[in-house]
Length: 162
Image (cartoon, rainbow, N blue to C red):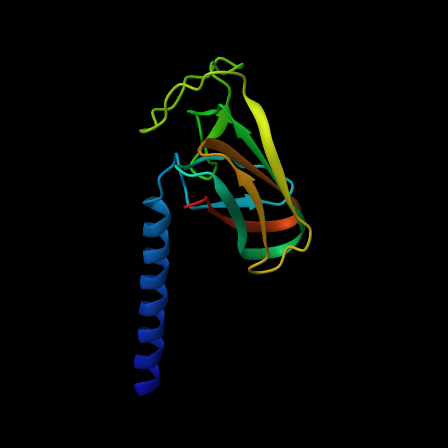
């Protein structure tokens, strides 16, 4: 009887933990998420902002499967576009979007002036837990587009200059 009680308690804890994790992801700001999960062979994108110039750090928070490297492209003068699916972050596009997609409504994002241009890129060659890479950027709003190479998925946290 005691063993059955322990098993039920363990299952209840597992279910509660899963629900908390799902709730945490559901509360992420779709415009400025603190982490991006990228399946191998695919790209995801999100806007990030900093009010100060300085070092931006990108850190591997989790790795599932075999991801050989992660390349992160960073663009300036970008806005998010709507039309994202539940498991795909918004795509950053120039203003106006070259494909004619409507712009999403993100607070604190003004219409950019100028061309959507690459501000830099970061490469993480050894994709292991807590591996990180950094780049120095000016203050502003940037489109961050990580691309994962391999099979599986990787979660990347973004730490703009403070």
